[in-house]
Amino acid sequence: MMKGIAKRVLIATLALAVISAPAVVAKTSADKADARILIDVSGSMKKNDPKNLRRPALRLLVGLLSSETRAGVWTFGQYVNMQIPLGQVDKAWKQKARKSSKSIGSPGQFTNIEDALKRSTEDWSGPPGPYRRSVILLTDGMVDISKDKKKNAASKQRILKKILPRLKQHQVTVHTIALSKNADHELMQELAGQTGGWYEQTETAEQLQKVFLRIFEKVGKPDSVPLKDNKFTIDPSITEATLLVFHKPGAKPTEVLSPEGQSFNADNAPANVSWHRDEGYDMLTISDPKSGEWRIRAEADPDNRVMVVTDLKMVTTDLPNRIIHGSSLDYQVSFTDHGKTISKQEFLQKVNIAASRSDILGDSEPRPLADDGRVPDAKAGDGYFTMSFGGEALNSGVGELIINARGATFNRERRTTYQVVPPVEMNLQPRENGKTLDLQLSADAKLIEPGSLQLEAWLEDQSGNQQPLSLQSSAAGGEAVGVIDLMGFSGSRKVTLKAQARTLDGAVVDYIDSPAEVEGMKPPEPEPVAAPPEPAPEPAPVAEPVPEPAPEPEPEPEPEPEPEPEPEPEEEQGWLGAAIWFGVINLLLIVIGGGVFWWIRRSNRNNQISLVEASPVASAEAEQE
Image (cartoon, helix red, strand yellow):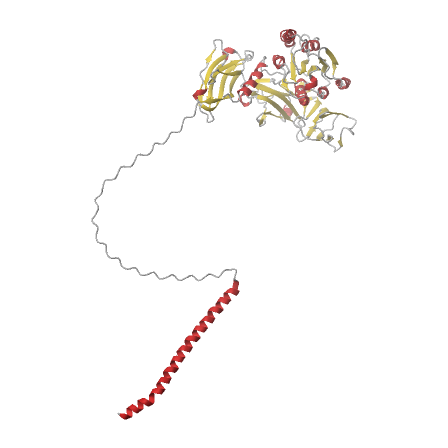
């Protein structure tokens, strides 16, 4: 009856539920990061992370953090412990963090998320200054501080009513990871959505490493170079390169080949290489890498990365984690050298920048960014390359934007994950008779100006034929209701929505999509039965003509018997059979011819004897006369 509704409408509902800040605002953030990492060590983790894969995932995140980052790690169960003290991420801090990660387990009795958020962020006050403030929260459960459900509910309300507003006030971005379907997804989504963070649910701990990578790229915003076919290029401006190479169990040891042709691995790495091999990945940092093409000898993985430290940086617009389907934003790319924006034409004229995206429908064709003063670019030659990103070109769901820049002597890459969400929530509710659906449409007031919303809806079959649906809008706007009569059609129909609105920032939203399908219940019309043909009218009697006497038929000559066909000699008999038949026929002809000759000759002799015997009698009769 409602094909795909349970899947697609639920996705749209959950996606919209987590958004509370404008989803199309793009900005450029501070360069440095201040990250607070919160790891759940409650007893339920024994089930959801039996192999303690939180440990290598945390070590991966720690290893990727740059030296300009401040960070600390807290674990929480019933109590909150500072696992790794807050400090500057240098070599000593990373060593301490990696060592301390080995003690992470699942000893806790409860899940005190409230206290973990409070204690890890209590030193933040006022504006953030040069640091981007971020919280990374990993948990597999609900708010659980007591066996008393009322106390748990009160703790959750304090998070939403007191802690969350404070985090928003201090411009903190909260990224949440739910390591179980039993986690409090509503709370996790609300924390991420209200602060512009990223929410992700993962069913298995084996996926934690790549989830942490995606969140690190949002928190750390590293400079990267493109990695294609396990090859990458280092330019003279790069002072350090960090390679992240994922590998499967039982894979051959990873090797790296330098531009000079020197091959090395974790056991024989040069002095300027720090190599960390862990469960599922290799991470190696090369100080003062040689310029030229490097190669990695390992199985290629789309999540492998080459991150660099350089004074020649590519600066990009901060893409919102969630983008309203149908809205667009201006996306800019510029370059800095020692912190100053590059505007020299000699440099800019040799730079080519292309943007591509990857989503559930595949990879898009690269499109260029221009600094030519044409809309949406504000001014030609100012060093800011611009494009318009979004609109109907995007597909609903999770996608990745990839920016590739190529100059005369350098390459840079930036990858950003985003989620496209519909501006309108659709709910289809069947009535008791099972033949009618109530259609409810509503826009989130935290995203859309309710009074600006204009809605249309229709059913569409596979041939593109449309059947409009009548909608009744609320007086305040932002909501509409309608009815779908399933008895009015048969077969499958898409429920298509068209919405025009403005976001809270005044951006235009022009949205059209088909988020659900419904199945009609009208019985198919019977095929018309062809009526039997009417009998033809009887022809009028025609007078029979007087027959003329027919001439006597001439007797037909008896047909001559057809000569029997001579048997065709079979090909298998060969020339020998033909010769035998030829001899037999000749022999018969000779015998027959000889017999005829003998009979004729005998007849001639008899005639001669008769003539000789008759001659004396005749002479005597003649004499008597």
